[in-house]
Length: 159
Ligand SMILES: [Zn+2]
Image (cartoon, rainbow, N blue to C red; front, side):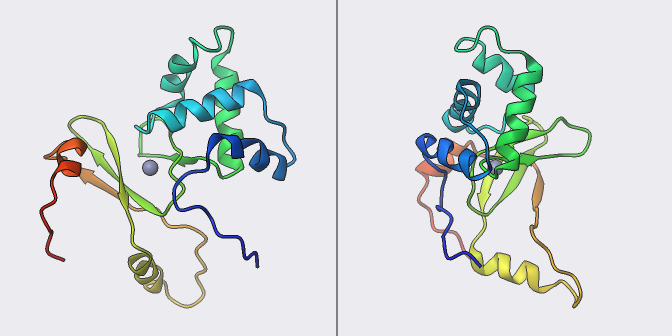
């Protein structure tokens, strides 16, 4: 077992080359720009949206290349692929344990932090003989307040 601890948030983009090297891959300008785009605006974009955002910096990039780079980032565990049924895959650079809240009205996806104690409880419901390597929790519904409002509000919540 490795004693290395995962960073609680995201790796700085200069760690990208190291993480890629760990997987036997080279850092390329495309991979760097695409990872940077994901870090800059964390709204769980689709591959098409990432493609549109990298166009200004990589005018000659193809959608296929964007897909390939995203796949690489996912396989290096720098980025999480998030799937909602019927929808296209979305990409999330948040490496800390979190659930997703999918706003069915706006189509937006929000990160919901998962406390380690809660995650442990979730894993504890598994009967003997089931060994989960990951768990995905997706909430669906309506976000009644914007994330800015949530951040500004310091009202304590009952738990
Ligand atoms: Zn996320």
